[in-house]
Structure formats: structure tokens, C-alpha cells
Image 1: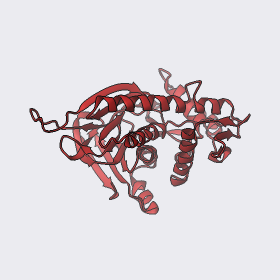
Image 2 (image 1 turned 30 degrees about the vertical axis):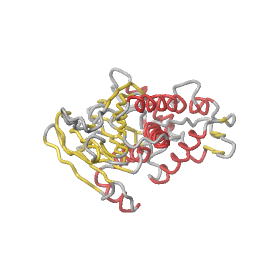
Image 3 (image 1 turned 180 degrees about the horizontal axis):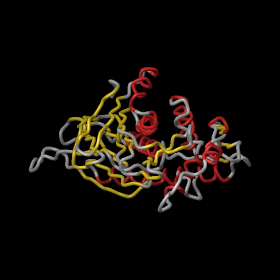
Length: 330
């Protein structure tokens, strides 16, 4: 779980050169939410509104901003309840639902162990892993039930002083979803938001009158496209370990943390998991969860939940990769 992920999927549109009976598409890219965000639409004003909305909401939910709700909640853990925005209430409720859906694999209350490994990975050379007893102790500092949410009074209280929130695995998707919601209220029918490889496609590509085309890249060879998907009123998010990892004691570890063991996921045969879902909040959280579970457990996970998700697993090495599909949803 992290606030950013490297880009392993991309979105593209095919303009008709010299054809004037189709709307012109505009594209703008900015560094936001710890990643590059690209917005494509038929109006520069719509693009500017989208960026302004995302920036405002990201500051409210990013735990590194002193004025954010999450920063204040973590600072007052075990002390007192904190007044927060309706959006913070909503994302915490959604986080609790994701915790239940994944049976604890996804847990925003595990900020302590996530921060611990971020600090470890920043070191130039990690000669050995920290003692397992230390890891288990820090990993035990979590508990979604320790977060009391008072939606009526817009208050949240973290009852355990050792718990810290980290919304990295869900915030980006939620921010994009709320932006799409705001754009719909303004009458926008078509837009594509690509937040560091996590994408929501609203409506159709206005130039073609057909769904937007989204390609899944080979994370180990960005020039190679392994699958192209038509996407409309749906989201896709990807989690992988091909670009963010570290080596220790002869093993390669991902930046993604298995919150149940407290350890980073060891680099495995498959390199990325992409999830298509009705919204990016769900796709974002599930992509990380399914990457942690591994390819063999994905069909079981989907079957047990009667989900309408569609999952793609890219597996292999260098140019010799295969893509597997699970689920028949979006």
C-alpha cells in the first residue's frame, strides 16, 4: 500500500488527422498525489476544473500535509476525536468496507508498518532484514475497529495511540472518483483521468464515439503492449513490483507490504495485476490486495464474492510474458 504506483498501464486516443467534424481533444499533465496525472477531455476548462478539484481533495487526505484531516487524526490518536470533512468520513467508511471485502489484506489502520518499511527502503543498502520480533510488534499496531467514525457529527477518533492511518492504497482512486462525480454534476459526459496508471474513463472518446482504449503494458518492457481494453464508465488500476523493489540477503522484495505478516512481498513470477471495476476506489484497493494474494488465489477470491470485477495478470520475464484474465465483469 503506497500513495503512488509506477505507471504500468496507459490510456490513448486516436485523433483523426484533418477531420473537423469531431471535437478536438485536449490533454494536460501535472504532478499530483505523488505521481503524474494526465487528464484528457474536449475542453481545457473541464481539465482545469478536474485538476483544481483533485488538488484540493488530495491536500485534505494526504497524511503528510499538517493541515490535512489524516495528519490531525494521526496526531491525536489515543487522545481525542477530530472534526473532519464529509469526504474523510466517506473514505474511511469505504476503507472499512474494503477491509471486510479483503478479509484484512487491505487495512488503512496499518500505517505504522508501512512507514517503517518506507524508511527501511530509503537506505542505500539493506544488508539484512530487521529482527522478525521487531517487525511483528510494529505490524500489530493496527485495528480498523479502533477507528470510531461518527458520521452524524463529522468526527473520527482513533482509540489506540499506536495506530496510524495510511490511505495510500485507496486515496488516489477515491479522489479521482469524487472528481468524476463533480464533473458529472456539471454536465460533463466524457473525460479520461490517468492518475499514474490508475484510470477512470467517463463516457466514450468524443472523437470516435466509442469507448476509450486503454492498453496494458509489459512492465518490464514499456514499449510492449500485451493487451488493449475498451473502457467506458469504468476504472482500471494496476499494482506491480517491476519498478519499485529492493534486494536483501539474496532475495528481491516488492515495495508492497503484506500487512498480515508485516513483510514486503517477495518478487515472484508475475509482475502486475490490473483490476477493472465500476469505480477507481474499488479497483485501486483490489489491485494491491490481489497482488499480495498471488495469481493462484485470485479465482478463489472472485468466486467467493460473486464479483463483477475483471482481473488481468501479467506474468513472465522480459519479452516472454503471458496475460491471464479472471472474471467476466466490466
